[in-house]
Length: 156
Image 1 (cartoon, rainbow, N blue to C red):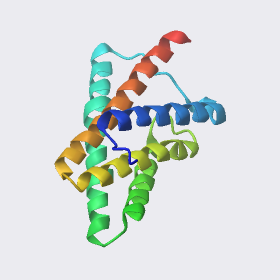
Image 2 (spheres, rainbow, N blue to C red):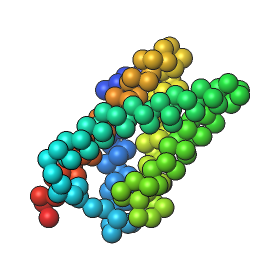
Image 3 (spheres, one colour):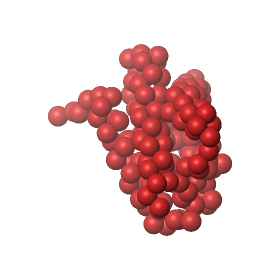
């Protein structure tokens, strides 16, 4: 029986992957995890909107759509295209706020693989829908990360 990767299933899997990699990252590199800083309300709103809405769309366009389409144009296989996209997605996160070590690149890699695989699956039916759904999964994951970052500020 083949399981169809629906938006909800992939989003749930992405959240599980994100939780597992975050826990592992906390274990192996706890000094690099920081709660979201206490900034002005406007600054928090702008950062949150950017993290939840704009960043997923831009990263999906760049790291899943454009790079994958380029890989397909030069006749690369699905697996190689997915790996290339995921590695570049991970490398781009080296400058992320948590990136005190190169371990963060490894922590982001599973999410890059999942998002790239999902786009690869969806693009065969409709590239625009693929872009929108992958951006949506990424946005949900980022939204949960932002909420947890805000909560971490108040737990300490």
